[in-house]
Length: 446
Image (cartoon, rainbow, N blue to C red):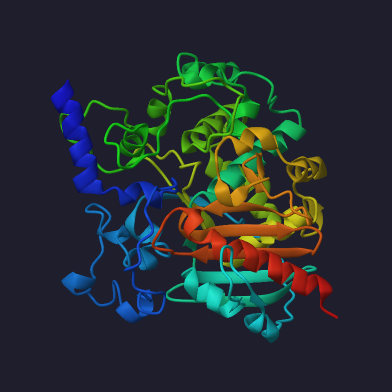
């Protein structure tokens, strides 16, 4: 048995690569290195990944050997996941796209601010290169005031949202709770009896939604025994070795999660919570997360494009990080949230859901997670809440994905990126003050 487990881990490492985990949206503990090529030198359009019929061998990327997510190749892959892996569609329906009014402000590029722990100002445009931005769109008072694309991402393209996906899953859960379809105070095993013997069974749905469960789920990628490896193996859609004995789907993996600590004591950012919440939503509604997102939000939003989600070997959408979508549609979703759930002529999300997000979660429980750059923040319904003077809140994903909403300044910022370091601590020192500076500029602009 021990040899079999060891073989499974070696197979996962060498056949799929550690980086597969990052692709599907789990925050990877990658150390910051100084020798990465900068954003211009790593531009995937310049490097011409996957160009040709067929591409040259040294420019060919594959899912099965992990080459697609080595840096700088991953800067191409984040805009082409559907080309390389199984996915499920999130339909926009057959209606017209909702309009986006545009009044671009060229002066934004020259806006200056001082990054965290720095003493010299940089410009907004410089910040985009520093953070390996692939696309960014800014809305102010409902109008697009800034929109830029880099590398291979185009306005009609789609990009991996990584853990921004969690925010969509959490928002769907909050919607169902507001409608009385889901009771967050009930235990998870009330809705999913199959999880009764796992650590999730005794947690409440609210503890899933706010990530305060007491579960054993290490995301330490340097530890070959970390639970994140079993999670990645279970969700990997590739064929398993003949002697593989581990879980073969997200559903099977979730049933193996063991307890660690007490439910409700502290915030712990663990992707498995969102997968478990996705199972609850599927059981309550009879729809998987991709279908639910399509019917409850995407078709009503007036999205320009279908979105899509990566899936495991039985087609289960990855609720914790598998969403891919267009930048303009991410901005539409943010603008809808900024308008208290109202958009495209209808109330898409109950206003009380947005009010609950704005209030935030338990700051003392959040502080126990030890995020030095996010002091004073909290987490609610899978949104990150700053509690700053503007009441800003955001969705966050590895490698720099972000949806930042400043209700006081009436600003929405949607960004896709492909930073070589997965952890947001690598780009937060530049991104967070940039967002706040832009919000102040737009709010006070004559």
